[in-house]
Length: 620
Image (cartoon, rainbow, N blue to C red; front, side, top):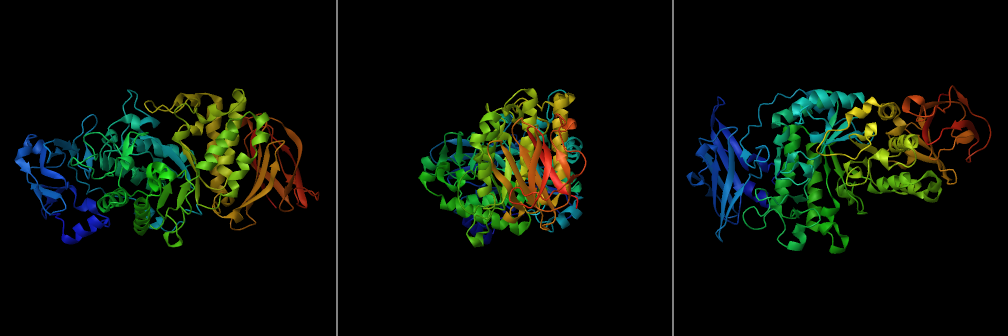
């Protein structure tokens, strides 16, 4: 039976029990033939006077099964022969001041479907994984030098059944995976799928960290989904929220009647803006709980990595640098990264961080936090602000685009066009764009062109790939009917083909985080809002030229300095008719001339399309 040893207890209290799920929660016990003997329940509740179980196995009569306090630090346990898989249960906790609380199990592996709030006994063992080849090769491929085009997905609203019900994890296999492959994405990022009470919270206000939400099926259905992703060489990232918790009565909040997982001090604990409570990340038992949770998802679900939500709220108290750096939380992040990379050397640990905190993606031994990627929130804000402006004003805001290159290589960045940018009155990506209907789509394609060619990995929220016109509606599926309209299907085709261009051109991903992978041709053409640059692969001969024309003006004789003599051709042009453009492009071969331009001896004379991105490559 899974009973805590003295060593387990010591490491749990020190924040170093990285498999706490092995002991805590509800564990089925079996004999040598696999017959279930019963279930052991273990919970941490140091401030409780009494802890009992109520569930299907005792007709919800808590007095039948009272847990024993197995040590003075407040760990309670009981073995129940009548408790079997799928049985629902809760802890009844009596406090010293006379209150009775009914709590879900913090370590429950499964939960009842909302609006019920019970935990469920579940056997995680027994799934037959078929991704061994993928898992064997995972550590061999550097995430820094590989294409990383992530599709951010909210499972509940990507696509629904005709009657409006959710698709289950296993049903998404035949829907989402072919779509990912068809559109050229390499990674899926699932918005929080831990158990949570309210659909509209999108999973960010969780109550069950170890419980894949029952909205979309059972845990082994999720295992099957990840398994199938891996068999198709798609990596799966979980959006993970270690900073704050839901305050619903059945959750972790004030678990045993007093602050336990959260801070004791109200000013640290109460996150009024979000209506949540901040976890005490410097507390050993909380560190054990959370780091074990990350390892749990990696071990049992073969998850490839995590996008850590609201890192600014972790680094600084309440996300406010004036309140001081949270040293305990910073220590937690470093312990987390150390343990995650011990589990998988090429795991993905991505910080959603809006601060200027230094060395977020630097190794711990070099003074960093230990993440290997960070969302580039500055790039996102500056770029969208620029594109929202009418093209006649863009020349006054030219630096919004160029400034990002002054710090692009200080961290390993992901460029996020995420769900946060297409909700709450911010408009969808295409609807942010100025101009008439045609110009909106032309601007959108140019934005996508910059997105895919700028140094950094990419993340795009679902629906943005076909230029959904409305904001994301979390209670409805995406506006798939828009694909019946040529401009939307053409927009999707452009995003798909940009993904394919990135895949085929090492220059667009191999040195994403190295300054030698980028060179401006001309960053100062403010009057015409034109940006030209070169992206290089590790083999410097392998390069592409990117030209962005961000006004509707056509330039029929645009001279461009190029790095070497030879024959050039267009890899892609966003103004082509098949993408919804006006079909102004450079057909055929382009030959250099010995005319100096942009401080280069060789140059090309090209047609520059309106509101467009053009990629050129030398064909020798």
